[in-house]
Image 1 (cartoon, rainbow, N blue to C red):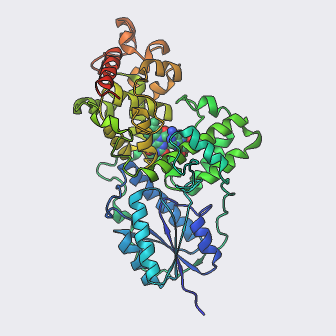
Image 2: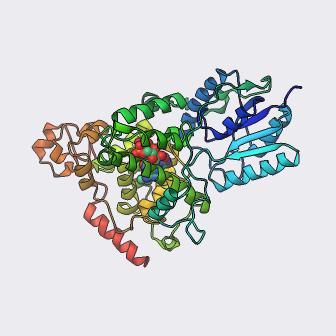
Image 3: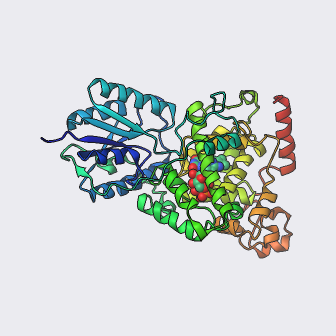
Length: 478
Ligand code: FAD
């Protein structure tokens, strides 16, 4: 007797290996159909930003090719998932629908609605946790609540049953008949055309599962040794740059955790431990999002609701374009614009600069990152913005204000990072590159710099901005 197909619905899990939903579908042995839905219509679902849309196009192309090697066609449909998924399941005559859960509340509501609907129709719906090491709601204090600090959360994770070993990619997939309608990827307009601003992204990245695994292997070989110290220096090759791959689920945190933990002689244990702790920061952000779904919109610490943020579009624009006059801030913002990514240390510096030096609401920065980061993540982006702004859970206190000159001198001591992304300052010696306004006229002339013309003067004075931020904090009695 011909078996009814299983429908696997891909979402933030665009990979074949360690994909619990796909693994379960393949183990059933029956025919499989694969679906991706571009859902920009369901209430509460945040549409992807420009850079993430570019990444998604490459990732879907890669997944489609990968599935194609097994004879399985990836069906693409656009519209509200609550309509599309049941419709396709019916067209296919599917008996099972399988997918991996996401952490957002709006996504959860859509998934619950679809689950209920399909079950009423007599289909089996199977849901898995493939995007995180521990499912939200399973890491709790003794009192049954989400731990409020990262340290407590991390401890609770380590005391929980460990995530099992990653699942292999299925050796064989039986394809369901694939004459069903699928939309051409190009019709979704995910990639920019006029203007085509994605040239820098194409140079910097290759989306897809294969590229993710290659990057992980390269990082273990060349970047992991020295990660604990080197991860703070943006010009050093000590970070993995796996975040966009992880964002779209081209690699799983379990694969990364396992590979790094068993890297053996590749690096001292402290480097591996530091790296896995960062994976738990990601985990913490997702668990917070599941508990506080409007984290991108509201201060987690509501005392900040009365904070006197400034409205100043000109300064916001200077920050977005990398024209603040503070070289480390400008280098970071230009790295973001050119490559769709920014080093973590510099993300902290630029975010602090926006929220504290310019007193601009962190939500404006979060929105800019959302649109320009290839790894823009619904949990990690707002959680980190709130952490830096001091409004979040277990956040850096607002009164801790980074000095952008000292941060540059400490973490980019030779100025290599600034020279790369702010080439108009490249002729300055290392001692002056993070504070060009202190250079004398002859040095500036020699370096070909006219301050205020070829490179801006600082948009605010650090000491005055710091005092202003502290006054604002006091006035809100936080
Ligand atoms: P590695 O150092 O190699 O770390 C490995 C992985 O651990 C990362 O890929 C990431 O998944 C996770 N990780 C590392 N640091 C953090 C962190 N602080 N919080 C959560 N997870 C972390 N990360 C995103 O993935 N998406 C975002 O939208 C995002 N927005 C951010 C906004 C701000 C203001 C700040 C300060 C940080 C943000 N981060 C975000 C966290 C961090 O900057 C990036 O995850 C990291 O720079 C990615 O580079 P990597 O893969 O080389 O990291």
